[in-house]
Length: 243
Image (cartoon, rainbow, N blue to C red; front, side, top):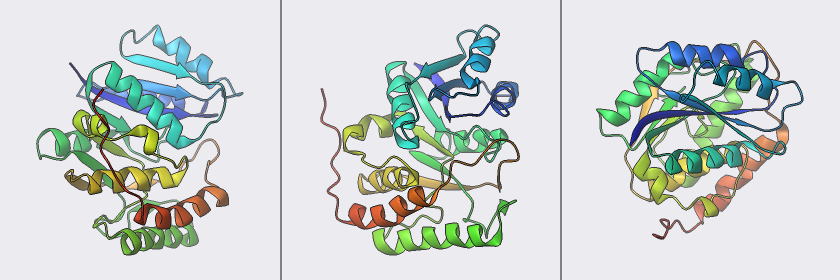
């Protein structure tokens, strides 16, 4: 069994991808990296491919045919991680909004503190967001409040996308029943883990908005999250059937 894999979805991240990969590999704990690349026209894949020769066996890439959505990219990465026998699987953005140093805190929460999933939380200790306009901060904060109100989950940052999963949690979730592809995917995964009785730990982080490249956030993605929460509230959650 291998230890830790960081899954990083990419679409047009040429400004960030080399720096984020090198930063992960510079940490004092060894993490492998899987880039799930959605056919970026800006040459992101070529940059990753050139680095794979420098980091054999640690840097991997799965190339897909197009921009198929954040949720499907992560599920692709989760399936790859399980097939390649990793014990701890991480979600992380490519744009440095998530500080790679915090991978160590998320790992500790699962490996040493009994977490089945550790969430890098912007809101567990006040509001820890840098470089967002106040309107977006308020929208994100109250979106999490809305999710808690509807679902009854006791999670402060319900839309967070920086996470560590224990293998057994991902083995239990039926990926075929995860329906959302945008930010609602992040809510759906937490809700599913919560309903299945897994231990969820929130770890305080500081979220810093990207300084390079373009945000993938859109009104459609936000709308999916708001409407999707109502559907989740009435969704029947079942564990994956053993093969």
